Image 1 (cartoon, rainbow, N blue to C red):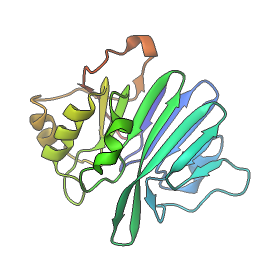
Image 2: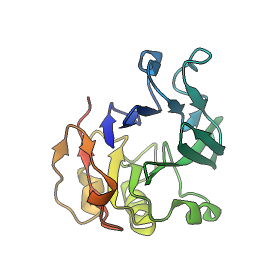
Image 3: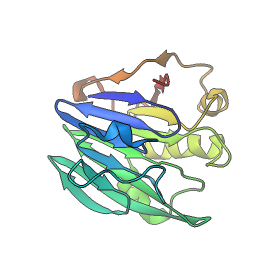
Length: 191
């Protein structure tokens, strides 16, 4: 699996012929995508043309070409609906907290625990604070943590008792490479 970061909360996740986009910032990237997930509604970009790719913008259960996607509401704020997603494919689970600005509702915790990868907003205001994001990481216990929505991740790293993390161009891994609950932080460079 390959995860590439394009800034804000825009990620591309690839495995074989399958490509999943999270919060893309423009429609040019839809070509060749299997599915597009938006963590906020209204979405940051217009929906793709019909039959271009599978479009997800609400909580619910979805399956497209062997990719299972479950979404749960994280509440509404300033007329924006926020959704948390758990994505499962190639025996790897990824939780995307999106543009979370407060702790998820208690009823969601069972769905968020022990993913292989956690994508968490780590930049502070207007999203969840770095201390609260670090608390979520410790509660969820992922194998890998990928911070998003942060121009500077120092405060988030400090909250997790790390002085620094090497920035990587992209994250490439297989299920066998993962250590359960390791909470390894992978800071990705903006592509």
